[in-house]
Length: 214
Image 1 (cartoon, rainbow, N blue to C red):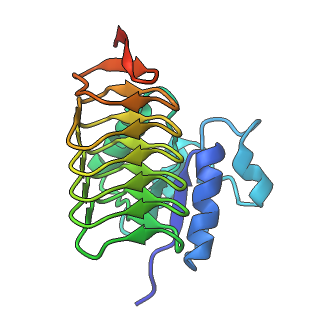
Image 2 (image 1 turned 90 degrees about the horizontal axis):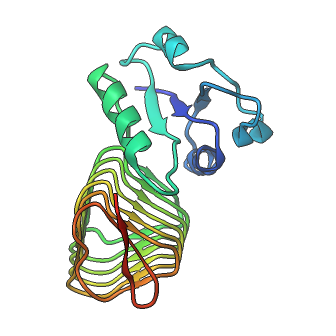
């Protein structure tokens, strides 16, 4: 049975990286959906523009797979909203894993999550749905990453860390072992987290301190 082709939602930098990840896995990509195309970074790949969200109706849920190409810089909310909206319409978001990623065989990775090039996920981890474990991020043993979270490029999550849903851990940040990062909190790029973080906080620095409530 022939596998369904893929459509990428979004046209920015993350969508561009996902396109080449799908190509590396031998997947057929029909094109991308976006509200605007003027500055779409993905256009440089030669991938076809299929229209905006309304045009997706031309592709029934049982005929295509979707890939969430919306990245996150300060919040994962747009990714979560798009994922939930199209899931309710019956579309499926398969897991996307770059061939160079290393994932222990006993790890659980949720639907729609994306494990990018050079990422490492060690034994006993659980990754929720619609997450990004970005380029060269490292998640050590027995961690639980809540759904819709983004572990950004080069971040290091030590063993036995738990995050709530919708967490953003910035590029190059480090979270030491046995901590919890609360739901919808943000850890600034390059920060070192040495104590628990409550829900809906922005923390940053070395060691990380609370910057403000969301």
